[in-house]
Image 1 (cartoon, helix red, strand yellow):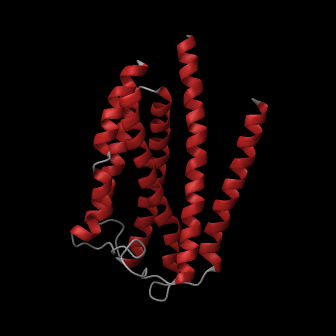
Image 2: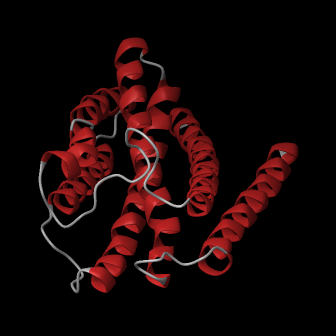
Image 3: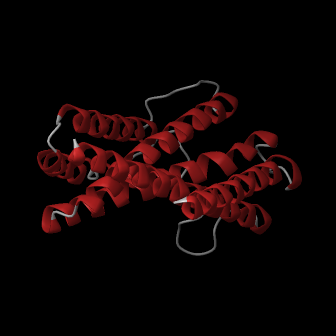
Length: 223
């Protein structure tokens, strides 16, 4: 047990240092964007946070499907942990996007298709977490949450493709697009480093949260 705690502590410090390093690099070291200036530096927080939200909710979807098939409680715990972390990072994406929007659009919020669908996605996974709290029996909670997790994921592709399907204020993709990304390669390298660091942070947080869920379930079973 002590060895696991030591590994978790050391890995947590490494992940935190990595995130701090890439964020500091994005805020200070890399050049500012030619058109937006320094406000564009929010991209190194906003985009990775949004990416982690996608990743987290895909994990919820995959684990929900796996749980309904295998009834493995470990998959249910992983889905719950990933949903919690995904809600946190999606909230960060919305907050940083609002600051960016105020600087570029002149307003904190607009019912743009991307913003609206993202808000719906966040509320759906908050509802998923609240639903889990209303069902005390573990197996029934797992089944109900898994079914909801499958349905909630239907909105995630809608969020991603909303900038292509509808016209709004939010810009179209600049990296995940056919051909060469419409972003300077130095800025792209910084963005990819930020995505990698945020993804590692997601993995570490989900690992810790899943372990805690396992301990809680064991305590409930013993009682």
